[in-house]
Length: 305
Image (cartoon, rainbow, N blue to C red; front, side, top):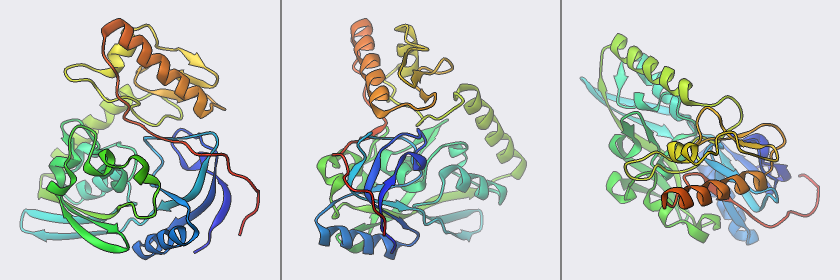
């Protein structure tokens, strides 16, 4: 295991924002994660597990602990007639996995076409779009809990709209070496016509592109309130195009904040506060964050090993 010190985190995030990690390590196997967590426990430091870097805002001060970038992405398909179960490692991209399976005629994850992030991150936040989500697709998953691998059925995750038992219970635990870490997940699939699958995924891709702003964004910043849309509420509050520093509420979709170049996490947080305050004042609706905020103390030193 090669631990880096003061590794800049911005290049690993979709927003291209974030200060350095005190320590940083790439993990490509479950055993790497186990080793890294034990190392952090031994050194008494906090831990943050980073996947594809979407749906997360890292503070300008960085993370005063160990950041584990988990990128294991193997896939195993077990087919039985017209049904199958696919086991995917948590570092695999959701969209890429959906495309790969669809090209083989397997449906069940096509809703994830174009979805940013990894399988592990998708489980953490119960990612979903275009009529599907993790809760309706997952069969079970395997997690590293206190050094041992535990198998969780889908019911154990307590999925709700854009959340899970892991996310709801995180709090301070998300920075501890004893945190549960998703290693792999099993999804239910069924055989479908290749042409029909390709058409559905193309429609999803076209619709997503029509709504997604160009540039560095994390995805949706806020959850949609019941019966409404966070983007509509922010737009109706007159905030499309609002800019603070290098960050801007997107003209194309107001539930996105774009890094125009050189934006800081402080710029983004000020826009988040502005959107919340304006929507609350205009509509008496309190917007809830979908993006995860990771803030820590400044990191000292400037050496690598």
